[in-house]
Image (cartoon, rainbow, N blue to C red):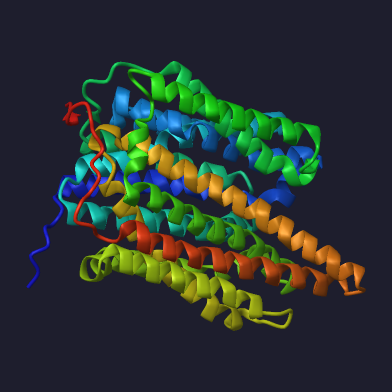
Length: 480
């Protein structure tokens, strides 16, 4: 007989609302990838235009996420979620109807704006809605499994829509889902905001947008333009200078966008590092494994998506178990073990070759999925150390860190893969063998870094007698 509290009907509907919103925004991170050939053919895009169809969304999504989290704290989390869903749904409709490269790229950029308002707000709403720790952990497990599954299902759904309907449906599908999420939000989510807030920190907001925009642009375009090209060097310089200016402004501000004392919390700051190592390995290796299964193993887009489905299922199972496992053994043990398990699964992909079949992929994919699902208690642990007063901006930092780490994973692992591939080609290796050499080195490094995240999680999340409290101006208030 369990004494675990149960969610009310209103809480379940609120969780469904934020889960649908999360599903849409993370799905659009990669659903477009498999539709690229059809989009290029129909809209007659050149290579640069094609890259920006993918990159425009990631750029605005990453760059504006801190702003979205802060606006949610100040103006109301339910209000910002609804606005974000409206923006996201309308721009999705425009993207599906696009008849030119300019229209599609513009719609994708506006989608990113909507996603930047939605994503940090969903976690903030979970914090405000579920005040009981165990119920909040269970809700975060659902949120985490939805985000993980949306990433894994993106290629499959994109392949099915593109192959059997049309590429426009990868965007149209967001419209009915968004409408349902809006209705549920208005019906079941209570308004909440930070109390005693002095207003919008315009200098802080502006500098955060400049920093993240410049950094994201450099990470997206560095491979194509060259890491030592002047636009990339200028972008990195702008990102560094604006980041330093941001820290200076926040230290001196009477109403800073981010209370920097938040990072004095070992579980919060250490949890962010572990999260970034997790995202670096997972998203980086996911991207290159997709290339491997299609380019080397010859899978169709739909079959490649199906290959990742067991991973998604295992993530759901792991997520469902994560809060109970963390409650039983402690989050420092459960998260560190999960990251070590996931890291070993990623590293085992380096043992695969050109003759691997569908079944041969499954052991590695299952281990990665189960380990990834069990890490969801990391999110709950970080959330528990965010002051309610700053749950929106804290969630923005959390999600922006994950997006930047994912981009770093793709760029850094891509550079490692390319360097090893070119080295093998110079020694006379056939092109496919050279790609496999680079791929194996990249996935091995990714696995090691994810496993290192397990060590960081053990240190950051282990219980201590004293906990560093983050001072807040006043307790959060719920407004109807």
